[in-house]
Amino acid sequence: MSIEAIYPPMLIETTDAHFAALIAGNAPEGLTVAEGGVEAPEVLAMLRGLSATVAEEFTPNAWMMVEDGEVVGLCSLVRIPYVGGTVMIGYGVAESRRRRGIARRAVADLLDWARADHRVSVVTAETSIHNAPSQRVLEANGFARSGERTDEEDGELFCWRVEV
Image 1 (cartoon, rainbow, N blue to C red):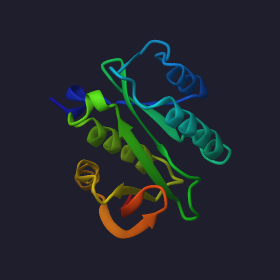
Image 2: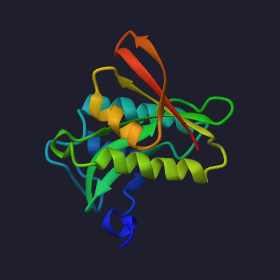
Image 3: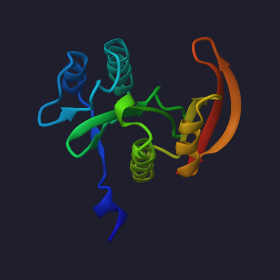
């Protein structure tokens, strides 16, 4: 049995209407939402705005992580792609659905998309130096640490990259 049969692809491109529904505390049409929601409304609003900004130059750029018809997380490009085909990703899983391999599978699907998109040659990400689960997600998907930096809001970060 193939891995796709066990874990079918789980990313659905997120539209503005999807963001609006999630911000309002509703499930996008045809789906349910993980217990407790996927993220706080103010974070969802920020992600909606980010997606709209990135969409001015690059689509697709945001996806819902969906498992068995339930929105369990989100992932997206977190800035307009750099010259040379480098994109930076961010992702998050609903608190009630963490530690189930969801982020690992979603990032794998996102890398499959990146490999198929001629505009993308490198995928980068950043994690808190204290976020070991997220670091394991990236390592499991072939990312290598490429540096460290300090962010005013997020503190000390590890930088990651993988060529696609």
